Length: 212
Image (cartoon, rainbow, N blue to C red; front, side):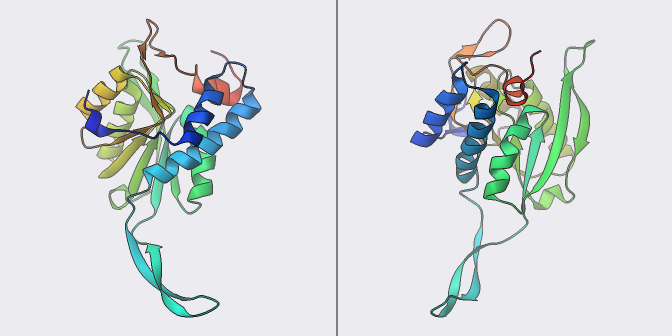
């Protein structure tokens, strides 16, 4: 595993909120709200290297030049369905960002990930893309989504998750060494069913109140 490709965000608020998400007693409503809050703080880390220019404005006291984002707008790409849990918090942070979605499922015949839905803003090659999925477990889904985005022209990309497993980080880094991973935690391992442990369960089910 290439630790240089992984950024763990140790902010106390993120770690506190992640513990709430891990708790099996956390309700669906609270899970959604805390997910939104943690997405906002993680988003600050994911966007810390955006290019700044200057703009001339007039404050109530004087005219001057001040920092201002330059270049193309951000693009958040959600891996369906759990990735959508990030969007409210991230759009609170960057309301002007464009949004895309990638749907991936496992092919029952080959057992390999297969893209069934792909809808993104145009000119991906000119945008800063942040790919979103709460869990980086085996890495198969994230690898497939990143590959599809590259084929669509994306050149500058990051992957953001809540919890990663060492196996997923290793697989994703091997497939896409040019894409930084931003996570709130690196958990111990995958279990025999491919779930991250200690983890937080199925993020999609907990966001939407469904099972299975």
